[in-house]
Structure formats: C-alpha cells, structure tokens
Image (cartoon, rainbow, N blue to C red; front, side, top):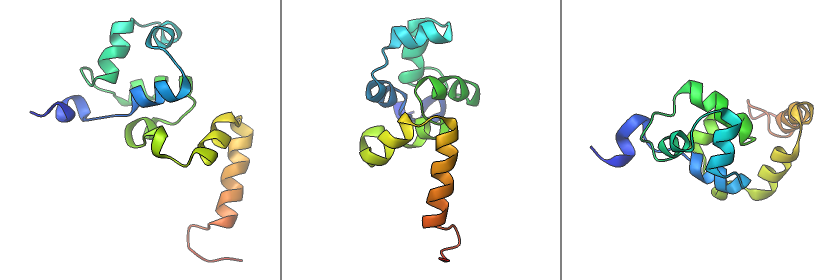
Length: 109
C-alpha cells in the first residue's frame, strides 16, 4: 500500500498549520491532545476522521473540506486572506455577495 493511501489518503493539515503559523505543540495544547497525535494526523498515521476535521478546522480558521482538498498555498491568496480575516457574520455576507456575482445557475440579473 502506498503511503498516500493509508488512513483515508493525503490531506493538507500540515500545509494549513504552516500557512496559519500554528505549531504542532500549540495545536495539541488547544485540542488537549499530545503533539504526537498531531504528528500522526499530519502524517496520515491516524485517520483524519470527520470528528478530527471538525475539531481541527476552527483552530486553523478553515473548513474541514479545505483540510482534505485544498493546499492553502495554491488557493488565490487575496481571497483566502479576506476569508480568513472575516468573522462568521462577515463570511455569511461574503458568500451572499459572491452568489450575486456568480450565481449557481449561471444566469445574471
């Protein structure tokens, strides 16, 4: 079995930690787990389950899906910076504005 196939496959947890400037020991302390557990999650030695994704994402100011599917260094940096600096209400407003500009059905008003 290839390393990237174990425990659910590759993820971008380590990249998000670096992107946000979060050290493993600090993340471990916030989540009340050991630094070794963080290392296991980053290195896919332990499955990055839905439970873990829900715990980790808020600490890294991202979403569970981004931890699995998106390297923060390859996302458009201006949009990512705006999103990461926004609070929950501002994020809801950003989504509404984006939906007006780029409607899901492709039509424009």
